[in-house]
Each structure stands twice: as C-alpha cells, then as structure tokens.
Length: 170
Image (tube, rainbow, N blue to C red):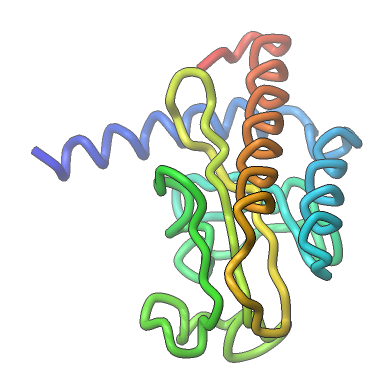
C-alpha cells in the first residue's frame, strides 16, 4: 500500500511541476529574491529554490549557483522534499545519506545543508528552498530555521499563485 501511496504522490508532484515548468517562472525576480534572502539570513555563499520531479531536480532560482538541472538522486533536496520541517546536515562527509554525493566529494564541496520543502496549498511538495555552505557550521539557530520555513511558505504561495494564473491549479 505504501508503494502505491508513494507512486501516487510522485505522479501528482510531477504533474504540478510540469505545470510550473510550462512557463518560464525562473525569469521572475520574485523567486531569485527568496534564494538571495535565504543566503543573506545564513551568511552563506549558496542558496537555491528547486523543483523536483521524476528523476530531476531543477534549480529555478539561485544565489551563488548556476541555474539548471541535475539528477535527483545526486541531491540533498531529495531527502528534504517530503520532510515535515527543515532538513539540516552540519557534516555531510560523515552522513551516509550524503557522503557519496558529487557535490560533497567534488565541486562545490558542500559541508553544510539546510532545506525546507515547498509545500503548495494542495499539500503537494514540489521542491525546496535550501542554503548550502562550503564550510562546516553549527546547527542553525531557532530564528534562522523559522525564517527559512517562513521564506519557503512565501515561495510556495508565489508558486501557487503562478499555477492559478496559468490555469494549472494543483
């Protein structure tokens, strides 16, 4: 039963993300602002707003990182997307989930990750708002965590609004 539930959730996610991807939302500065604000709040070199579907993670907006696509299985965000709150990893080198990822073993040399899911009003998680650093950090403060969750909620509302405008409501 769990397998069917997961397949159904993935299918719904994919349909919604395809609706978002059918228009060039990445050209909208509002999404870049979320990544910029997240990076500033954590004083980190990298932040991104991602969409995840099928086997891909698309970087929709970023601060300090190129926009593009990567294989979903090579991303931290795959683990953060269905997490109820933030997912934080202060030392990915020793975390079995992440130690093998190309972004940890190679460029940019990720040493810290925190990500919050982008959950639409329909309950579908379509991506993440995440912050990345190339140096190890202590866990985020309660204020930073709350701020990232708040930014993720605002980004989710902006994505919902785009779906409504384009007639692709989830």
